Amino acid sequence: MSHSCGKFSLTDLFARTEPEVAVIFKKFASLVEACGRAHIIPQKTRVVFQTRMRFTGCMPRKSHLICHFVLPRRINNSRFHKIETFNERCHAHYLRVRSEEELDAEVRGWIKQAYEVGEQKHLLQKF
Image (tube, rainbow, N blue to C red; front, top):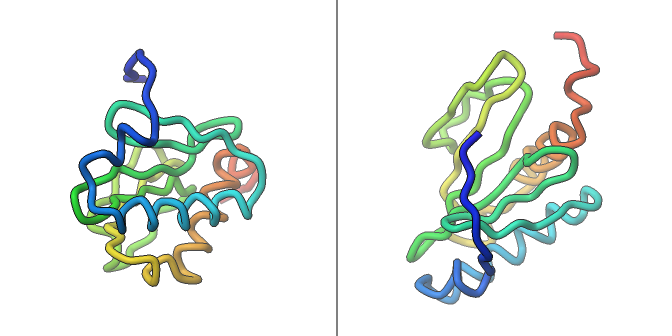
């Protein structure tokens, strides 16, 4: 698994974004925290959330966030601009978020599913 070493901060990640992007991230983080305990890990180009494993995260852009969710099955939804499949139970779904209002019930559902992946509960399910 690729990684980068170093000390990174949320302040550094959001330094070149419009102020609204940090506001969107704070709301996203609160939705993740509503699922349970998770570590917030700022990295060089993104911030990830981790329980037993990384399950969701955000990549700040100038005027929006790219959020991703690791889900146990592929979900075909026009809101996702990209889906990466790592194995039959691990699919990363990417979503552009330009406003807080886009963090709706559907997104909350994906965060909850991803949290369960982070807890590795998906490994107990039979497909």
